[in-house]
Image (cartoon, rainbow, N blue to C red; front, side, top):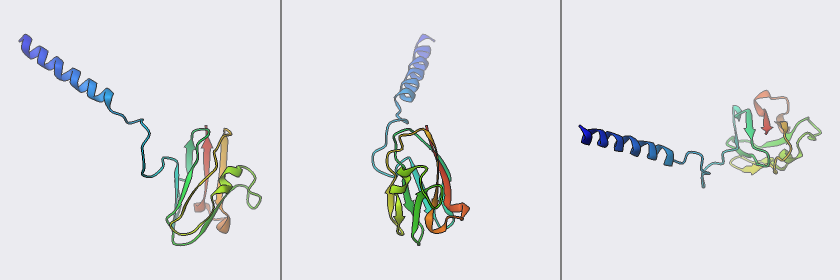
Length: 126
C-alpha cells in the first residue's frame, strides 16, 4: 500500500513539474510576429488589437492589390505617426509601425480606400 501511494505521489509530482516547466509565455523565435494585422480581400484582421507600450505592429498584405496604411484621421494622418511608417504595401509585402510608445488607442485606415470600414481598425497601446 505504501509503495502504491509513493508511486502515485511520484506521478503527481512529475505531472506538476512538467506543467510548471512548460514555457507558454516565452518569446517565440521566427514565425509570424505576435503583433500582426493581416490585410486580405475581405479587410484587415484583427480590426482591433492590443499591444504593449513600446512594441511595433506588423502589417502583412495578403491581398492581390496595393494598400496604403496610415493613422487616422483621413487625410491628415496625425493621430499616431508611428503607424504612418507602414505606408504603401504591394501584394505580399509586410511592414512594421514605429515603436508605439504613448499609451492611447490609435485608429488606422487604408488611405487608398479610406471609407471602407473593413480596411479600418484600432491599435490599443497599454
